[in-house]
Length: 554
Ligand code: TEU
Ligand code: CA
Image (cartoon, rainbow, N blue to C red; front, top):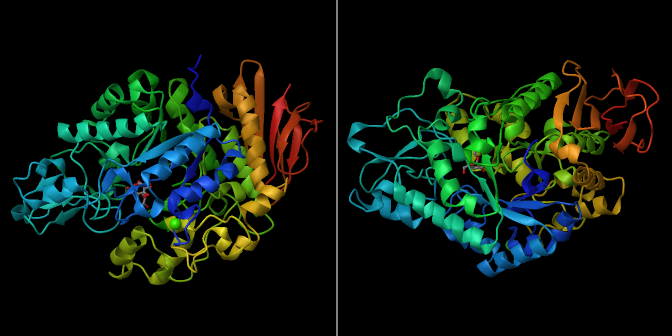
């Protein structure tokens, strides 16, 4: 049988500190703000909080550009605040994992300041430099626009940055870099954090021949960036040197990782990571920054593929949103007023009964939706600046086309402030203006109202999490798609020994029928309508629009 671990049984909740809660009225979320709101999170039954970067940073990419790994971002508070946050999380029976961003640093990190200062610097080899006299080293592109190579004034040489210019890539082939990273990991683990979410971790090893991307590879450079020759050697070393010495959990953000590569990261026998975030599901309706239609059958096939990819000796995550994605209901459900709460609950039902550790993104538990952007200037994200330069400024796309697509795909949807109550700025801040505008729908959609209403999205999540905690089959059971070809129903079974549960969800606005041997006599454990406690009297099940049931098969 499969190995049992606390991190397989856990339900995680991601906090993006900048947008969570502002305690001192400067318009920016902070650590004391998070502490004030911990009961909201604990009340859901959450086991693990993943905190997006809280480190000292000039914020070129909202903290994913770290200047000092051992210092707390001034806007977020102090190390004493962090220690108090950790203690308050533990007091509530939860754990904390933090973001490990070590593919790159900020260009303001002291290592890079020294590295760029001269070719003879003893930190020169901490980053990836190429002779300026030879021209741009290759055609690698940056995720935030333009070339991945930047010519630096001090020496005239190029350095590599897969993300912004202000995020130079570290050279992991340099043993000193690895030693420094392992040290900083120990620093936080020794403080009592329970592990890491590892930012673009598959990108750390580089092929130093730097061949050009082919036209095909150019469509998804992440595939190449994630295929460096020494990647798994480094992950095994990291595990041996650090992770194996602690009772911790690790989740790698696996941009660019194929199904075939997945077990290399998460197969237990390899001692690398516990699980990865695979982007296949969230990217199904994307073609670069352009939005495209997605069919339910493709969504189901993708979940099935990912489950088979990890098999019974590896482990997966289940997530529909994070700080880089549009809001979950807008993305996978139906944000129209009559279906918003219903479809948010349907998605929660899917996520929390699936195989893999579920990650809920802040605001998802109250069914927050995308922000109605009307102008490109309303976006804050550095990614949008890159797209404007690469597409609008060059005439490759119109501003209207970019805006229309960003209204579906932009990362800023997830970054608008958390909606706490119906007071000004949704109770996020007492400042006149938060760092990013609050969604105008906060009078209706907010945490206070959700907690007060037993029929809310919040309480639906709470019930599902409780069910998952008391049902081993929902954690350790096998996963089987029962209706892969149905174009409106997602139905799957989780089975462990004699325990069988079936999730059935209608992904449409009209009633649908689904027939399956074994439904008769099944008991409704969870319903997003009012069928809890019902016993099905037939093998035929009619599901109302966006209806979602969890059934126990006798
Ligand atoms: O994201 C890396 C990544 O591959 C993406 O999801 C990326 O943000 C997206 O392709 C851009 O559209 C991680 C972080 O989650 C993200 O916030 C950072 O900007 C990025 O790394 C750089 O650290
Ligand atoms: Ca603040």
